[in-house]
Image (tube, rainbow, N blue to C red; front, side, top):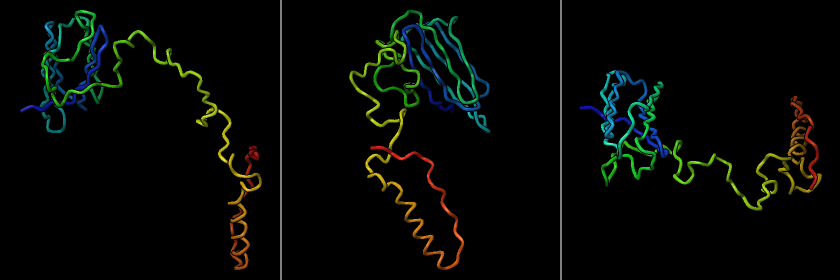
Length: 184
């Protein structure tokens, strides 16, 4: 009996991305039919375990313009739809989807966002990110420490060194900080 590999999918109005995650797949076979039939089979692992996926896609596809790309970790299919339209789901079967079938969120684009390029319509209103202390500008992590108290760790180390020098043990010295003094 063959197993099902993990299958991820995403779509655009004109194409589907179907990724079969099967590391080190051998004897890969794919059969696409214009009516929307998608059949995949391969073996993997040291024992050449057989894997199969048999899907009835939601609508018709263009077999001649569909492409495939194989890597050592997965097989990616770019399946051209027969008509440029969004599908409500990947397969004809309604109800509970097969457990091995998942959405590929890395490739997913919502229907209303298909024509926009990422980041071009981001409107953050009147938010001034420089005031959020998120990096990118001069950082001041010790802004709430009163001036002169920012170096308390070094003073504690000096006290410990003085106590230990009474025991005549050589200790490493801590070089003074090269960072500029923080202004509040």
